[in-house]
Structure formats: structure tokens, C-alpha cells
Image 1: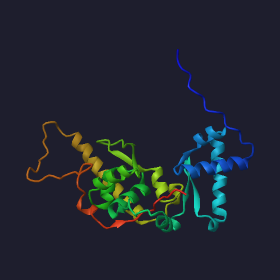
Image 2: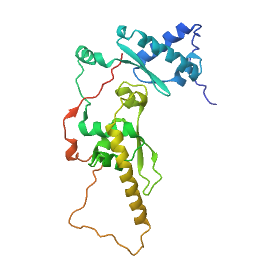
Image 3: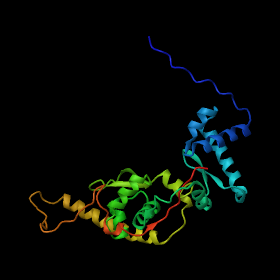
Length: 250
């Protein structure tokens, strides 16, 4: 006979919008990490859509008189999070004795910018825009959870496509990619790279169609080295670290 799992005691229903808003604020404050709208709805007896609508209204409360608040409510497609404002990060670190750390190198910041403004992109696209091998920086950003794989490009070799993550939005304190500052430099570089990328893909396609008895000449004295995850960084990685925004629990 199977044992019945003990049921959690039923929560007292919240009857007013103000009580629900206060409950959401309390949950987000205690969590310190993004909470999904469907999870909040499950606890509060609401649909995810209703919770998202209410959270949007709550977020306006923090922006209407923003000078009076040291915290902000960030909204994501499927979740929301209560965080401190970047302005007060130095004071928070000093008060809590938090050491600085987790900064990104200049090369990682470059790769992150290329991905953020042109996503989804392949690693070869990033290499062409930067003019150097970016394998180490890409792996580093994957390990930090700032970018992630999002399928493969329908092209010869089916290279992996990369996009930024929700953690990227949290770290930089923005709600969506639409809030990224406008820049022309990356757009121009990307436009120039598109033509080069098409040429490379065409060459790759032509190689696949070459006769089977054809052998591409190989330089046996020296070959290119691709750094795998965990290998030592390439020379361009050892640049001066560039700080990024650190999120801190309110």
C-alpha cells in the first residue's frame, strides 16, 4: 500500500490587490534570484499572465520616484527579480565586506558585445568581427552563464549558434535587449562580416562537392591550434580586466 504524501497546509487567500503586491514583493526580496511568473501564480492562486501584469505595475512604482529607492524590479519574459541599483554597489560591498571579483577581461567583453548586438551568431562570425580566435572567450562566457547555445546554423558543418542569457540581462541591469545602448561600430563590422561569412560558407560547400580522390595539401610543419575548454588562454585574453555590473541581493 502506497503511503500518501503529506499535503502542505492551505495558505490563507489574499483578497486585495495590495496584499498580493506586498506578498510578491516579500517573495522577491527573500528569494534574491529571478522568480518565474507561473511559480508566483501557483502560490498566490493567480495565472502567470495576471502575475506578470501586476509585476509590471509594481515596477512602475520603483521608477516613478526612482530617487527614493535603492532597489529596482527587473522584468524578464518568464520571470522577475528584485535587485539593488548599480549606483549603490560600492557602498553595499563596503558595508557587507564583499570583495570585488568576477570581472570579465577586455576580450570577453568584446565577444559578449558582438553576441549581444548580432545574436544569434556563430563563433566563426565572432572571430571575423574581432579578427582573432575567440574560442577561449566564448567558452569562458558559456561557463559564466552569460551566453548559451541556441541550436545550429543550417550551413555546411552546422556550426553552433550563440545568444545571450537572462543572466546577462540581470548582470547588466536591463530588462531586455532593446535597452542596450545604440552603437554603429558593431553594426558596420557585422555588415562587412556578413559578406566574408557567405564567402567562407560557399568555399566550404565547394570543398564538400570536390572529387573524393582530391586531397587538400596539408602543411605538416605547422598547424593551427584550437584551444579547448580548460586550456590556457590565448594571448589576446590576457588583457586588463574590465569590470561588469555585479548584482546584489536587496
